[in-house]
Image (cartoon, rainbow, N blue to C red; front, side, top):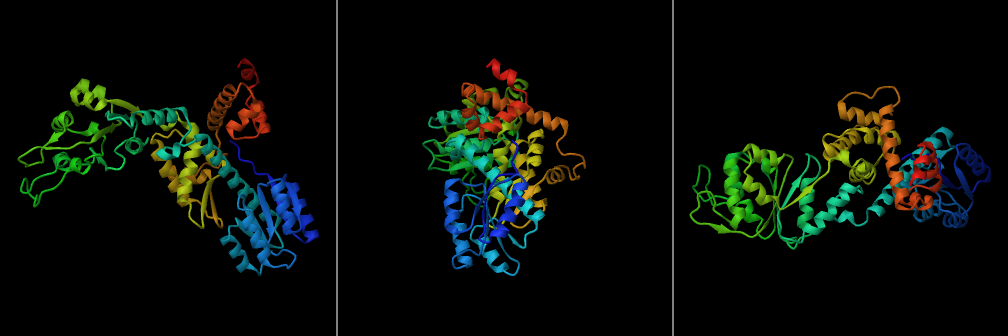
Length: 461
């Protein structure tokens, strides 16, 4: 989705000649400008036709003090506010930033600097609005922590809600980095065991000779170094959920011991003399093909059918490309601090949409963390560019030619076509409703239909 770099600006300035000059600059850049000379007029215009951005002189009538300007900042919290002030009044400008202003510019204004600051403020504002719209369409999905609005994610969330209240075992299958533990935690959160422990065990990260002791515990003196009785993770999870991640890495001998526990709920600590019983729910996950492993004899067939229960598949990121903007902004929001915020430029978002993502969501998250660290800071914001992503990805600078290659453009166009056609189908070819569903204006939808040459496909629907 193309982020607009022009918008509706409310210009609040009591000095008439300067206001007219500044308004002329902004209109020449393609912005729609509403002028206001007093705080009262500014508030009236703001409520009558809400702008995308406010340019505000800190010193306002009738007393011509900075407090009048400061009060207006608080009234304009829904949109970015850029304050203008004399170069000698830096202290009040910084105070305005603390009160919520986006940035400040000293007078006399530099038209080129004004253009850049306003363009970036509008870009960030548009990205935040897109995120809000995506979240609104996503509904109540945040309660699972699963970010996304694609069919694959919707189906997964629906399945989790249906089976979570039951006691049936679940097997979560999916490539590495697709959020299998997140799905397991969601199963626990929506179950009757939610107030009991959730214990995660990565079967491939614990040496085979220690895994039995980790799971079942051990008695004092059972092996060298066992100087006391130790409760295993199975007992730690009593009453709750035990998550066995990457169970495909478990040895055959350990699989036999686990199978016995799953059959009757009894286990014996290493070196123990009596059995113990624990009530819990077991959820397993792996990126491996357990059916093939069972056929080849590297995974017990009887254990596979015991843990299978219901299969939940976590989709690869390549299956949910349309979720990338929401995922990316959510990760950047977590990185943002009180004084620094992060966002992506439009070309950077195109770069993300065109990448193959073999490491899935985990790769996307780690790449954004690296790119945010490498990106150049400009005042109180950081806008990540394709160069930052390319360098974080490969350690090499991006080529000097245009960042959007033909392949990238084709992939983005294909995604846009699919989203638009789906929205038109769901709304009975009603352009106004489809535009609302997509989070863009009706005119914006019309332009995309024309650019993507969807007229013929639209008439077929």
